[in-house]
Image (tube, rainbow, N blue to C red; front, side, top):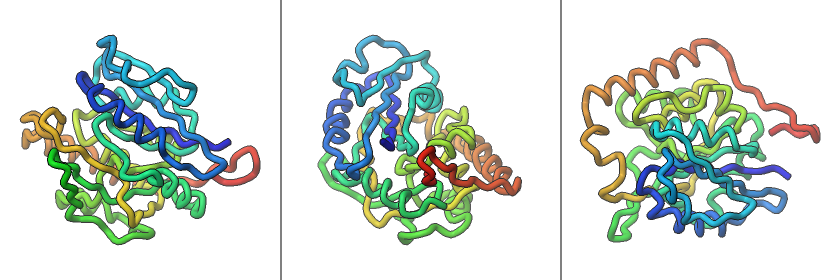
Length: 257
């Protein structure tokens, strides 16, 4: 039975929202022949961060040394068994019960595509939802649409809306060792070597709250921001210039996933 893996890194204090995310994932309606696997990886060993998540066969819980979101995702990736991979942060949500199903359906219908993304809705503390300013049109994304947007400082989509072929994620090296922007980096690496599809419906509720990493002074340090984006963009350009392209791998039953 094909599986979609949702991978969630949990930072210190992130357990506050985990139960809500659990309920969101538990009620996802997948295509009849698909199953959901949730890999939850604590960034550190604080003993108790993951207690909000029940022990059940479709959930895999783990912890490792503190090292940031990229390291936590990488450690969690070792336990991912799905042919498709989606990252959902511990304080975010999926907007409806069909969010994962839409991604599965697109990638099943278009085996030549390595990934799909979707609009993101900012979820404000008062419950207000706000759409991003740079959402591209739905359907196949043009070459370099995301990379050129990142160069302008206007990345069109959130990296955490990405659902990708798991083998593609592994082939491009996953999340780079940068202190932020690692989710967008994976998206740009996937774009560099494969085609992607933009969904018309929102794929993420991005919770705005005082404890999130993106409101810290370190995240907005201009020199660090310049360096991390330069690292990511240079690597994406190098991948593109290599001429290597991802190709779908036949599964044991002869289909291509």
